Structures are given as C-alpha cells and as structure tokens.
Image (cartoon, rainbow, N blue to C red; front, side, top):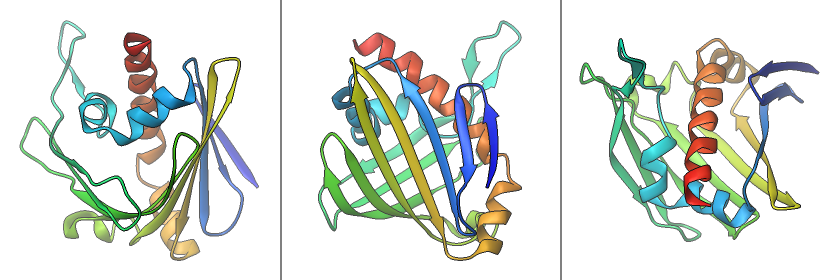
Length: 175
C-alpha cells in the first residue's frame, strides 16, 4: 500500500481501485458535515485552488453553480469556474446520508474532464469525532485500476490538500 502526505492530508492507495484521503479538522463533525453539504459553505472552500495575486490575496476560481438535493436519490452539481473562464463541472447522486457521520454519492465530471478523471466514481465520506475534533476519511472508488492511476497522475492530491486547508480556515470562522 502506497502512502503520501501533503500538508496535513494523508493519501493512501489501499486497493487497486481506491484512493483514501484522511485529515483531522479542529471542529465538531456536525459542522464539518454541514461544510460538505450546504451550498453556502461549499462555495467558500470546494473546487480548484484559487490563483494568488501579487499581494497574496486569493482570487480566481469561483463556483457559480452549487446545487445540493441532500436526500438519498437526490442530485448534486458543482461548476467551478476559473479566472480565464475555464469550467470543471461535476455532478452525482446521493446514495446514503447519515448526518453527521456518513455521506455516500456518485461523482462524474463533465465531458471535457471525464476521460482525464477516469470515468465515474463512488465516494464515501466518514466523519468521526473525538474531543470536538473531526477525523475525515474520504474513499474514492474508481471503475478500474487504470482510472485510479489516471486520477493519481492529475494534480488532484495537491488540489484536495489546498481545498481541505481552505475548509479548515472556513471552519475556524464558523466556530
């Protein structure tokens, strides 16, 4: 099993078709669950890493579309947009929702990114809490080893680490 660390994110490859990311957040799991499921929070942390201006301020990527129908069988859709107008749309369907501890959904990228991301995935988010801190474990199950390996070759690990750093910053403001 391969393991890589990026910032405070741990990424492992426990099987031929899976990527597992884990991270500790200094916030109760109900708040972390909300940050993963409420559009008003998602638009503030999820998506492509923003560009940094000369002054170090975040700018660039936005998420003009963030739709969440949080129920089993309900759909979700995100459309991050870059400063150059590039878009990276993704969508899926919720399969299981157990607030605030478990969220299972499908994920598929829009056509322009579909092949690069290796097709669709099944994503399982588990949130555990101890002493008001939350351990997040996100498992991404790919259709094949080739699809998983293709995803690993993208900047997904760096992007996820940066996104989870933004999530940690957001959680601090929500406490």
